[in-house]
Amino acid sequence: MNQPPTDPGPGRPSPVGAAPSATPESASVPDAAPDAVDAIIDQWARVRPELDTRAMEVFGRIYRLARAMGERGEKAYARYGIGRGEFDVLGTLRRAGEPYTLSPRQLSSTLMLTSGGMTGRLDKLERAGLLRRAPDPHDRRGLRVTLTDEGLALVDQAVVAGLDVQKDVLSPLDERRAAELAELLRVLLAEAEGTAQQPPRAE
Image (cartoon, rainbow, N blue to C red; front, side, top):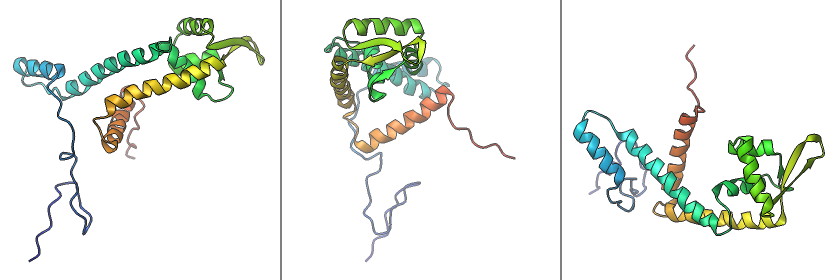
């Protein structure tokens, strides 16, 4: 006697003849212990039970995660004698490709720094021999910032160290969940920065 097909649940159609696959809810994900955000949400629930605090749960954890990852990243980069700010400068030059050269203005724009803040970072990195500044041959008033061989070697090592820290924290998620999280965060970031695509206006 044939058994009736298993209902995959709303929004989860199963291919004909395919074995039922694990739903996101049933996929193996480590249970996390209650955290500081849970405590805050519980306190608000007691004093203001009518509040919808879902957004607070999400962004409270995003803030704490960013802070914790910033601290871990600083420790990783410290082994190479630089901080996160200096890594960002070296990484931006490295990503530009050969000859690993940009103007201070291009660096400031990419890293959203003032010219004063950028000058301080460039001074430190130049003293360490990791980059050099030279007159721009196409602009008598401009400068070009270029990675030295030492800077190139250092940033190639530091980026691996930073990625190892990130991968370690991301390890409880499988590839599918990590990809889903990346897309969800992309949506939130676009909304926060005002770059989210707006639906077309009805005529």
